[in-house]
Amino acid sequence: MRSRPPTSTDKNGNKLYSWRVLVLPYLEQQTLYDRFNKNEAWDSPTNRPLTQMMPPVFRSPSHAGDASTTDYAGFLGAEAMFDPNKKITFSNIVDGTSNTLAVVELKGSTINWAEPRDIDFSRSTFAINGAGDDIGSDNPTGCNVLFADGSVRFLKNTIPPAVLRALVTKAGGEAVNYDQY
Image 1 (tube, rainbow, N blue to C red):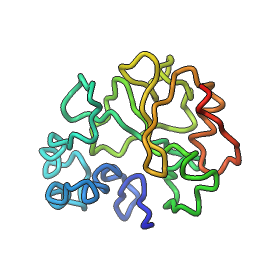
Image 2 (cartoon, one colour):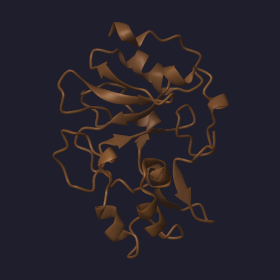
Image 3 (tube, helix red, strand yellow):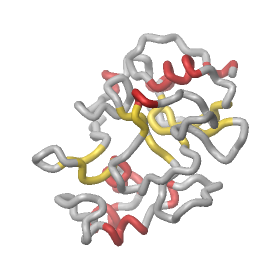
């Protein structure tokens, strides 16, 4: 597996654009990917018009927001899949790819799909449709999540925060049975 960083940065470490731009070629969006100036930030004068061309895959079917805001984000942090300090490979996912969340649904997101912004692991409430602004959907009973193995599952909002946190960590060593919630 070729690993991808959560964001692209310039030589000075300034964030340029999101992982969502980096995965475009794998989503049959090579033409859009090629149009991005990879040496400039997502909101540069050159790239800004492209940020209005969000592929539908980054939008929830119930999306009611701006046409350029994504409904999906990953968790940023050393314990999560999107580690800002290193590229993650399958060997780093000690808890197993079927037990580790990669991307979650966001309710009311204000994140432009090309923007290098995701959920801060250290500030998450680890609650679905709770008071926090990090995980949720228009479905009052839960939301869809993408696991590192590529599977998409629906997690109910009754899942305890400790169990959800365990699913977000890639190498916490927790044994998680989330099907019971």
